[in-house]
Amino acid sequence: MIEFDLHVHSLFSKCGLHTFLELIEQAHKLGMKGIAITDHGPALGGRLNSPFFERFCSPYSDLKLLKGIECNVLNSEGEIDVPRDLLKFLDVVLLGIHPNIKPGENLGDCTDMLIAAMEKNPCIDIITHPNDPAYKVDYQSLAREAKKHGIAVELNNSKLMYNRSSAEDVTKLIEACRDAGCYMAVNSDTHAIHELGCDDHVRGLLREANFRGELIVNRTEQSTLEFVNGRIETKRC
Image 1: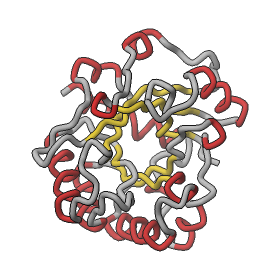
Image 2 (image 1 turned 45 degrees about the horizontal axis):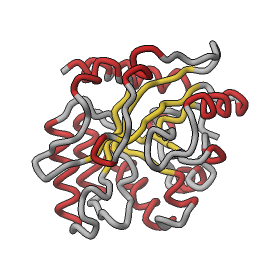
Image 3 (image 1 turned 120 degrees about the vertical axis):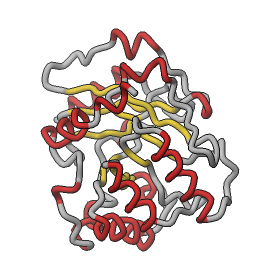
Image 4 (image 1 turned 60 degrees about the vertical axis):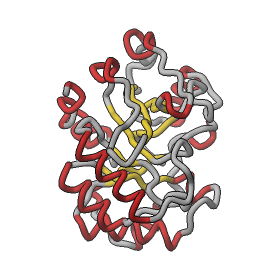
């Protein structure tokens, strides 16, 4: 199980099924140390509720709640849909390529989009599910660029859980990050509550690839908060 899950969707994403409290209560029941609520940006219809960012707190003293967003690449110029007025409230910013971009873009185009976004937006902390078969990415180029900026690349449990990627392709992603010395974040990408904290589909692949544990940013509560706090000033840009 993931101790601190950094990719969780609530019903404020069109794809999420549960309230903030339902997710937090499940995380607490599982004995997790923390979660980040990371609903989609406006390009995918995410409803970023300002009272959540300004007022809401975890009801459990022993469960850390981070507030974030999974924003979307908008174009080849590196523009993303993170609301700049919310940056001061965000603990963590995730970025992925989603269906607001036409599926089937070639490997070079998708790679260039992500690299341009990383160069233009220092607020980005994690690149999500780059192993989406609809948006093929050059893993080696992505990992080298992420390493340069101190950004983590996500190892997404749900992609394998729902057969939306292959173990072979996930292994290639892990090996690219391993060889580049790039951080990874192991996340569930929760949409339904039973997915929360799950890493069972990718845990073994990390071991088989001899990926260095210290490069997994959310391996413990302490390592998660060190990573997040070390990058917090990038949200003030």
